[in-house]
Image (tube, rainbow, N blue to C red; front, side, top):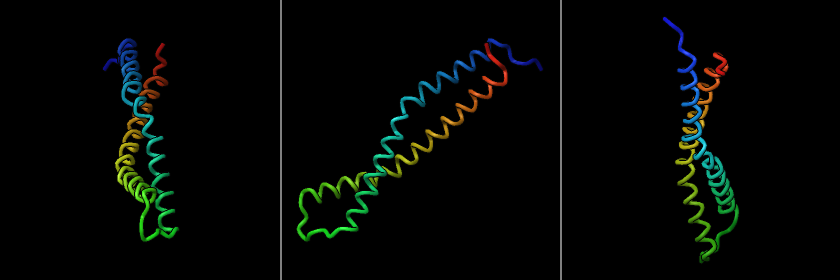
Length: 106
């Protein structure tokens, strides 16, 4: 069996780079959104269970409850998305590095 031609390897390398740029790079802000949702959830959770909530909740307390609940719903969804993004990025980078380093495409 013949080894792949240099032009085919260049096309494959360019395709993998384009896939990384088109699919992975626009989704990188998900990491920050996930971190923010986790921080809001943990801080709000700790505050609500460590402080005494008055019997008549104020608008600030109700708003805080809604924000903490919304971030609590977002955390598992964003965790799955961030993990998928991480593993896809890792796989594409591995393919890119394997073909780029082993064949010395120039």
